[in-house]
Amino acid sequence: MSIREIKAAIAALSPAEVANLAAWLSSQQAGDGAVEEVQEPEANQPDPSVYDLIEDLVGSVEGPGDLSTNPAYMEDFGRSPMR
Image (cartoon, rainbow, N blue to C red):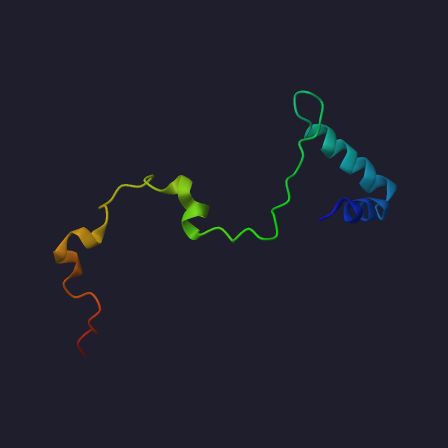
């Protein structure tokens, strides 16, 4: 969202909504009294991978490591179930 769009959205707010927004912004102020700047992503940046999105969760659960390192786990991999 550009600054122009933000200004237009704020101009469309009722006085009560402006008061609520001002109160919220006050609660979000950093320790130095300035509202932290939101960085817009660059248009040419690729979308993050699933790994990028869950990177903080990797290793947080118990269980076997990479199943492909144990040949027994891979015995029937890719075969159709028998009917």
